[in-house]
Length: 299
Image 1: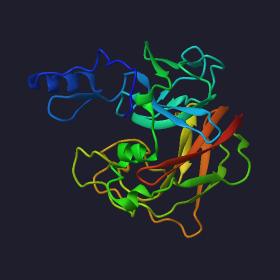
Image 2: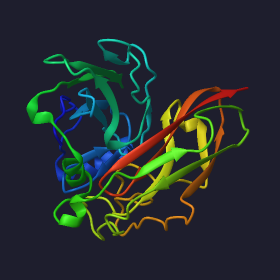
Image 3: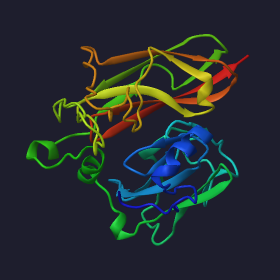
């Protein structure tokens, strides 16, 4: 993508073939892919990433950030504070606190004024004992637009009709803030619409896969809070890269049929009290729209 300021972890090493089975059997936390390359199941940190910037109609700019969770399976929770902060300004500028596995792109935006100039916004993230930073700026080589996003996420934009693709739209019915008790089901409904571009296309039937499936898909997930305390009914597909199943990157995965009324209901149940943000993502294979609902969970 446009860029990232994160460093390669010391743990991201290669092992000789004779050592692979020993490492896997001894640690139980490694997965082997692509020959000798090692991907950790858990225990690794999350690295913030600066994706690039975009200009708004009023002349202001958005600095767009994502992240790389270096684990294949572990979801990492880092509350806003000294270990998860943006600077300058308020340490809380909309960043996630519940980090899904692998590379998650175009996750949140930080709006800066038209005269931001050569200043920077720095996202500092400390997890698993490692601190890494991403530096958001308006350097010319970091500019992004829809065409770049489509190529990056889904390999779209080669054909003229693909270049006419518009971002899906999603909203959440009723209030954007809810209160519920532990164990009490919370009913939520998202409404999504899309222009039908690109036409639905399953993910490739082999791995590695460069891009995800095409066509509108909508899923709920935890954006903030300890996500291990939240369950969804019906179960949602994964919104991150996972070739092993139930993911738009899985071989042959196809977007579910779009409901005639465009409504996507879900029931969320919380096992522990606290403050959570649930996000619903509408993704057509190249462009993304999100909507959030904040939930206060009481005993």
